[in-house]
Amino acid sequence: QLQLVESGGGLVQPGGSLRLSCAASGFTLDYYAIAWFRQAPGKEREQVSCISSSGDSTNYADSVKGRFTISRDNPEKMVYLQMNSLKPEDTAIYYCAAGSLLTTVSTMCVMMYDYWGQGTQVTVSS
Image 1 (tube, rainbow, N blue to C red):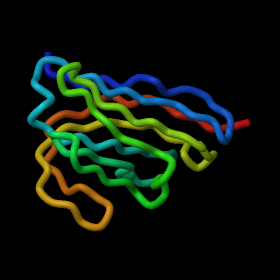
Image 2 (image 1 turned 120 degrees about the vertical axis):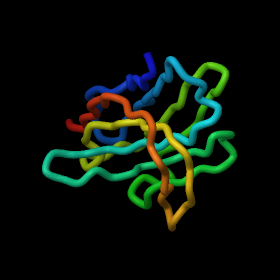
Image 3 (image 1 turned 30 degrees about the vertical axis):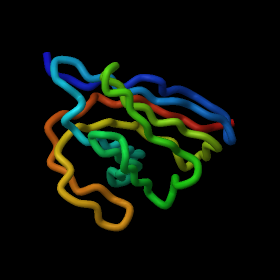
Image 4 (image 1 turned 135 degrees about the vertical axis):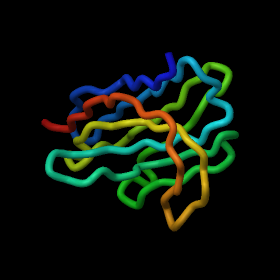
């Protein structure tokens, strides 16, 4: 079965940290760029970060730059999003997606997506 599965979400206090994981199964992750998105209730989906297939190029939305770090381990078929200094406004469902990287525009990766995960909830609250 070809799928992406996110994990690592949860409830954390403001200023805390979480590390999200995105596990690929049924396909070779090496060929795909990966993007992390989030969607909060009543808001549009936002691309948070993306990483090239080799991992040598990364992009971050301005809202998370300096706080979040994306990384990948292709042999393990894993992509990570380390989130530090979390704020209440980071509360959302976080998704990972795999696809072909077409170009980058400002802080965003423009991609054709082949696979999406089901999402993991992140709640930042005291």
